[in-house]
Length: 307
Length: 307
Image (cartoon, rainbow over all chains, first blue to last red; front, side, top):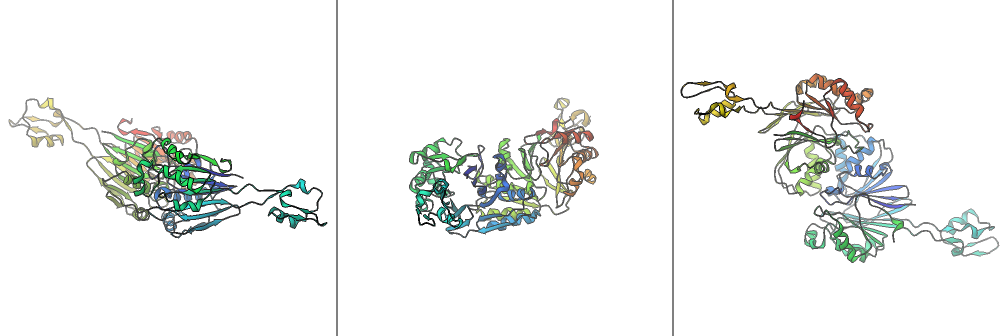
């Protein structure tokens, strides 16, 4: 099953050089989550062939315009295209009013259930669970209340090796216990050790999204060991003072954060309009953490293929 | 002096096939007016090389999202880029609250004077005048309060033919009267007929913007004789019933309107997402009014070069 990230926007506040404001799609199985929704996200979704009606959840990190100004347009388009399936938005509590006021003024009657889940300032913990995925939020260090998100697959059950139980009578009730890791004892008392009759499931995968934030090593605890970490790298380290004033991080700091968090791979983004060429940012992060990539519009990462 | 229209968006509500929601720029001399501001307008301005800080006035026809969802992002970017020069937005009175609430939530401190001029429902008359241009608004026939706009250059003064007054003493005070059309009488009582000593100025140019609206022939009075008319042509005429239900017009009706308004040229736009190929819409309008063009992203019309 895919666990796949697509970058729709890699720009910081001012969109330049064909870079668009922040938006990403995480596909987990058939379900799509949208992470942030800068202006133009609906056009980017179409451009990269992502079926927007499959989005089930939208996670908004914070209420700076480059992270949410595309939401009301996207919701309007989903509605015009006939959506009836529910959609949940996880965000600062004030976003609901902003969106619903615009729906009222434009006389938009939504034909699908739109649910807002408010993320209280400073909240840390699980905000969403479904059959396949668990999403946690944690506060990062920005000028206004801002959340990072950690997406984790649920651990899957072990795979039963049918050939090892050939000719053995296994009651239906026993199967789930075997898949959960128990040994199996047949009617005659013969014991089949779990390790002999099953194979471990693929390890659950995880994706951590950390932007907009100062370099804050205390946050590494929230994302420790993630398969893929997205961390903002708005500036080169020579601009570290400016970065700090604006509550942003440098590429060097993104590398440090990835290294200290023990992640498998780092993806950098949220690039300042001052950089046309992103290579120096990539090199700076790689000097600290070699497993780094630049995430630009259209970058797709199959998280199971990392490493 | 240029009087030049650039189309930034030709889509109706759902942006598809690289078409973006409505936005246009009218350049009159050095001054730029933005007409409507759908999502992504700031990116379109950059794409077509329009210097966004030169925009002085923004005219918003109505509060459907595809005509204003890009405004808050554009204003934020102008601010981040250091704008200090004032900007005036002419729109439905409710737009100010929507924009300013988002400015408050995003903790945006504007460094330039932003003025909203409310257009009361049903208003018709002059809404803006400057040295070069007069802008009138008039109500069109849409589901919610919607305005059309007519941009007219002020008549210019006549050009004095210096060679016809060679050797004649003309007091400074007399020049403006001559340029305004008066004959000149010199100290000796000799009369110089105005038509002999001056040349008429180029005729003032005009641009009429009419969207979103039903086909409403009564509106032709507001735009009679315009050099260029933009009229929506959301559907082919075979969809006339759907068009009417949605308070939109067909390409055939855009042609009728242009013919009845006696304009010099028609530009059609606001195309439904159902049409990938716009040629049938163009042909349908041309069958009624031959001087028709399709206005798509990047179309530039120098209004003095028409005809």
